Amino acid sequence: MTEPVSLNGRTYQPPKQPVVVVCVDGCEPDYINLAIGAGAAPWFAGLADRGTCVTADCVVPSFTNPNNMSIVTGAPPSVHGICGNYFWDRDSQAEVMMNDPRFLRSGTLLAAFADAGANVAVITAKDKLRAMLGHKLAGICFSSEKADKVSAADNGISDAMALTGMALPSVYSAALSEFVFASGVALLERRRPDIMYLSTTDYVQHKHAPGTPGANAFVGMMDHYLARLDQLGATVVVTADHGMNAKTDAFGRPNIVFLQDIADHWYGPACARVILPITDPYVVHHGALGSFATIYLPPDHVGDAEVRLRSVPGVWQVLGRDEACRRYELPPDLVGDIVVIAERLWTLGTSRTRHDLSGLDAPLRSHGGVSEQQVPLIANRPPATPLPDRRWRNFDAFDLALNRLDS
Image (cartoon, rainbow, N blue to C red; front, side, top):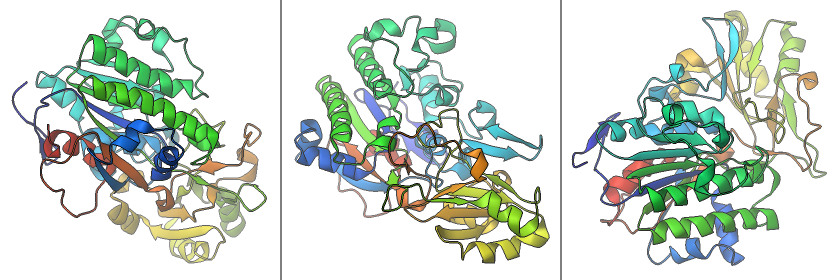
């Protein structure tokens, strides 16, 4: 391809060499910083002299689906429509997983580049993202989770398992992410896509804090594969969908505000509906507990609830729908009457009886709030001209890769 691609008010130059954009799930900057300090990430360490590094903000709520779709559309949720992993569908009066392409309000850069003639490949760890990332994409798109069930018709590849020789990984394992990287390297070696998007899982980050042996081992694994992508001549840009924080007290017990229980106590059962956008099919490692919630209430209770919620311990911010959507660039029709964001060490739940924490084998770590908004934005090439001094977002990743780096 030789012509630029335009989407959502931005123009992207065609790639001069393979471009690989990586979204590392749950990776705040300290995961990389402390792994470098421990000597576990030599490739990342070497970029200090030849690469690009800025600290960027992800979109809030700091969850997987909104941020991955922001990265591949170059725009916030107010444009592409995906504002959580889970939402309340007013039309059907039902709680719905937001992992279906029908909820997308924008095309993706992946599909746009493929339509312009680029060879595009997408590999994601969890299958929940595959359909949206691959929406209208004429190219390769598969997940580690279901790599054994691919077909040429549905995924653009007939045998994903043969790429690496790895066994199909468990969805609750670091190997799920390693399968993404190993497959990406194999594709670059054999098919040399023009553009590749790799998206991992945050299973490790939910269990291991930055600088711990488990976290450093994960970053070291990632570092190994990124170095190989670099050696193969790719422009590599690494960012994250969100950060991660401990959500416990000093004894390691989960800090939880049960919003549905509180609302039921104030206004009676069935008056309020609390939606937790972190909810997805993979809740063992976080118990569906994150730091962002939205509440639906009758109009005559909204103002009173906003005032009262601001005094609840663990609550950091309470906003009405319009202000929340303006501040965090969200689609108003998919957000409740009130948005609640927790303090850094706290999570938000519905009712105490609805959260099963029996699967937690480590102190609770989670995300969703503003306290998990800062993420790395790193490239293996220097900027062609000095980068502007402005607020960078994780959804600037493709702009950085295609428009701003020295080739």
